[in-house]
Image (cartoon, helix red, strand yellow):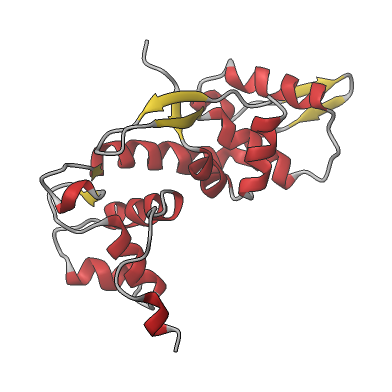
Length: 198
C-alpha cells in the first residue's frame, strides 16, 4: 500500500486555513508524525511529509477555542488517522466522556479541498530538468507555478489567467498558486535586488 504521507507541513497549513505555527507545534510535540520522502531534481534531499488527516487536525485546532492537552491531541490524531478522508467528512470523534467533536461539520469542506488539491497537484504539477531547469511547471506548458503566483500577486485574477491561456483550466491555475505558496523558491534572488530598493 502506498504511503499516505502526501502533504508538506506548508501545504497542510495552507489547506487547513491554519498558521504554519500550529502545524510545526504539532510536529514538535509529536502529535503529528512526519515521514521523510526524497525529493526529485538536482538538490536531492529528504522532504518532511504528513498524512492527509493532518489537514483535519490543523483545521480543528485552529477553529476550536479549546486548550487541549497533548494526550487529547494525540487521541484526536489517532482517531483521525484510522479514518479514510471520505469518512473524516462525516465523523464525530469523542475525546473524553461527554466531549465530542463533530469533525465533519468543522472540516468537511477543508477535506474536500485538500483531496482535490492533492489529486490536482500530482496530476498537473511537474518538475523536469529539461523544462525550465526543473522548476515546477503546469503539465504540458512551460508556465512555472511561480509565474502564475506572481501574476495573481500583481493584480491578475484567475479569470484573467485562464482567458490569457485558454489551454489552462481554472483547477490548474488554483493548484499552481497553492503549490507556489507552499513551496517557495530557495536561494538568492536573481539580479540586483539592492538596486530596486533605492
